[in-house]
Length: 103
Image (cartoon, rainbow, N blue to C red; front, side, top):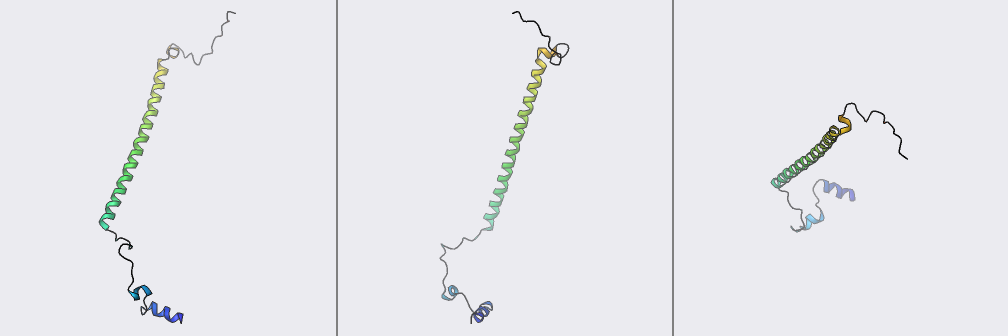
């Protein structure tokens, strides 16, 4: 008997119990219909937000890189200003002469 009902349902002769009784969800409980215009705008907003986030990340990395190069430049300037390195011969590479202590 069950197979006859399945066959009738597949052929469209039978309807579900809710359809037969005329029952349906109230409009409040039904899923809202999708507005294609609204979906397109949401998609655009999401794309723009990802672009802004990517640009902010790039700027952050650029600032970090600039800070790194500023540190290197300052270190190089400090080496250039070092009086021990500006005299003839690099004293940092020459061995130190030990002197006798006065005690």
